[in-house]
Length: 174
Image (cartoon, rainbow, N blue to C red):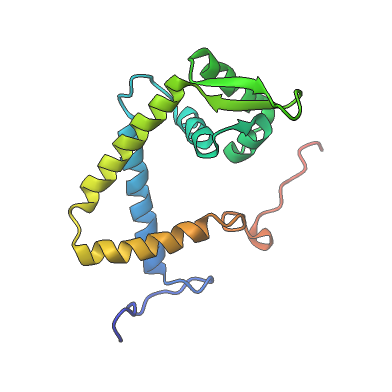
């Protein structure tokens, strides 16, 4: 076995070493726990979907209701009710778009921006604390691996199920 090569293990149908998938699942699960822990005890108590909404709006600067619903994988009416609660809490504002007043644009309020900044800082600190236990060589390898992994995860077709292997939904109207 040459340097950098993985030991023989089960290979999945995708051609990926099963041990790599298992290690990635374990690490990502731990990151989710770390991420959620960092969001605890914020001044404002928010559900995970509300935190995700803040992150989406912060990432885009502004987003329309349809775009938010799409990113949340929710129907627009559910996203609208979510925004009702967040607007009442003073975290977001809804405005008519300049180009089309029928379109609703969502932005973070100053309070929403401050909350996102605090959450981001807590997460960065938690990640930095975890990474401090790694060697410099491991950290350098992690940069390359995570950069490539993140880029690939952002591809729209990555999380789509393989239609050939997805069970057919039964018609419930019968």
